[in-house]
Length: 85
Image (cartoon, one colour):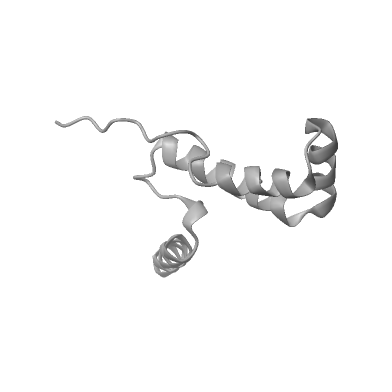
């Protein structure tokens, strides 16, 4: 019984510390938004991927970085309407 409590307390600690770990109340939209932001942040951190995007899109590297940062604001579009019960 003690091990189960320890595992749950560790999981709760990780969920409070890191946003992307999710929890039972995470909606599909929130989960997708976290995934897209993580991917965009990874692209921003890898210079070679930015070069590839710049060549593929025929844009400057600065424009590619700007577009990636702009897409981080709402990577999946505006949030869906919340239904009132």
